[in-house]
Image (cartoon, rainbow, N blue to C red; front, side, top):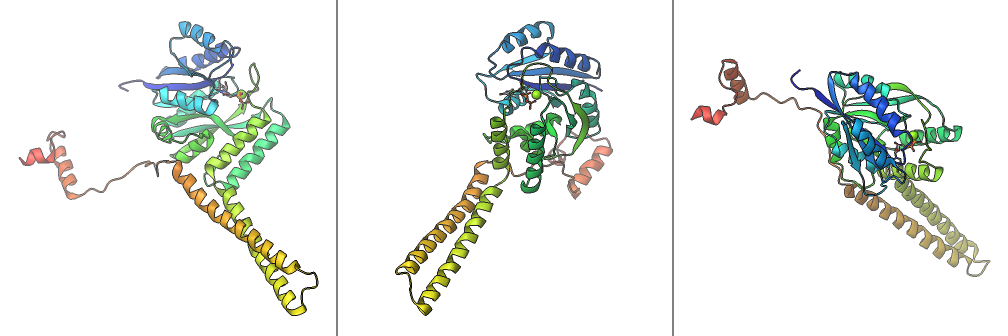
Length: 339
Ligand code: UDP
Ligand code: MG
């Protein structure tokens, strides 16, 4: 091996003063034991309100392989992670929480899978300790829903803890959208992926930054950035309602024409009301369809990423390769040789 490969640990931290020293200690111990690789620990301070920044600066004195990325304010974990990915230089990057819920001891296993050729190795939770049954149940429901309705299947029970290769990182950073639901984006970029199972520990110290309101918004974010299904459902409900309104209107009209109008004005009022309501819902549905398309365009995602191309060997190239085999300099271009 000519040059040691670099592993970047990307860890967002928001009010984690109590855990950071232990996190850095445990992570460094694991990385030091992997003598084939060089490493950096990129800690992103996401506008913490406690002494997180000072703690990181202090840690940097004894652990020089720490890179500190200090954000100007609290942007939330998704953005903090993106900032960390953008600042990392590694050949492989490992996204991990600083609260030690993701055991750093799993890193060698993730790296081993990467060496087998996988571009993304996500850590899948076998158990979720220290989490209420309500959180477990809502998480399960969310994954189930996304699995069924979303066009990008998001693997269940997988957090952000994972290894991604350099090319996946570059792909992710090409996604310009502002609403960054990372779990979905990770799944969206594709490339060969595999999983490693682990037990999720309880938080080492401090409190979770999530509450149900935030989780609900997070779920909405995932739903709205990865599927226009709700919009589609709305337009079909509109279509169905409009259709039945028209039919009912027709029925009242025919009834009034045949048997007369017992309640004065009732058919006129009903018909105009149903007609207007139906037309409105139908038009809303049409707007919804266009809105969905505009929404997808506005995200400006790249159309695709290429995993590999196995090129056709046309004559010129074959000749070139043969010449190379005969010992001609591979650097000389065909034109130069012709001259
Ligand atoms: N985090 C962050 N910015 C935030 C909230 C959280 O960078 O606004 C970090 C936090 O420091 C931790 C990780 O994201 O490293 C996960 O947060 P938390 O443990 O609160 O979430 P949970 O594990 O309960 O899902
Ligand atoms: Mg946590």
